[in-house]
Length: 210
Image (cartoon, rainbow, N blue to C red; front, side, top):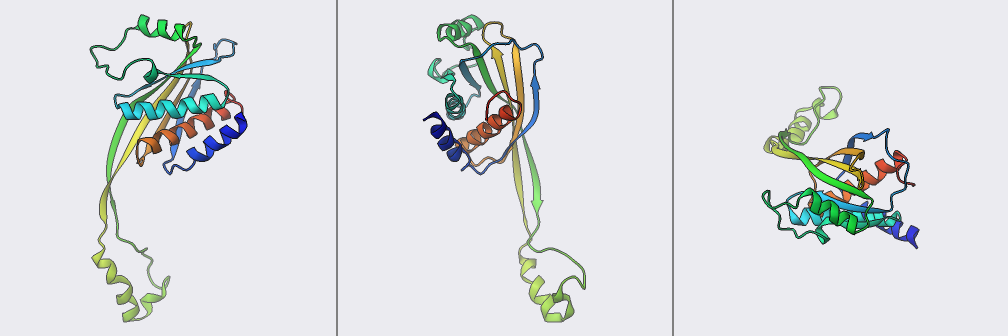
């Protein structure tokens, strides 16, 4: 049953069109030799919809792999500001109370925008590469419409995420994954793409079984 659910989840997630690329992975050489069973998932983003979407997709992926997953959005109300974020003791006590032995955080660490010019359609290759150079009308008929399609400017947005797993008891960092996503089509598309890249990387690193 779990295998069927996992395959259905992957099929759904792969329907997203935005690629996320893992840019860096680090694993502690001093990680404790223990098996983690329950993960507290916390997306550190101020947008409530984005937080819920990311935590839900990651939690679903963790549960499909046999872990118990608890989303921070289900535990702490989404009305915190910089001045009323719960303190360390409150968070760790709640994690302990819930029986979580690991804490997984996801944070948006940077966002960049780059404007670029997209030229009008049509490749340029000099004669005799293309036949339309051979006579006046062939040349004119090919290039004339393109003179009215001068191109346009577009802005690429890149989101840089950092994902960390901590031991809930010692607070020690176990591994860290950095990733980038370019021009997501929306919050859900972004969170699904991120989850696919994350799961694939953890499987490649031998942390999750394929």
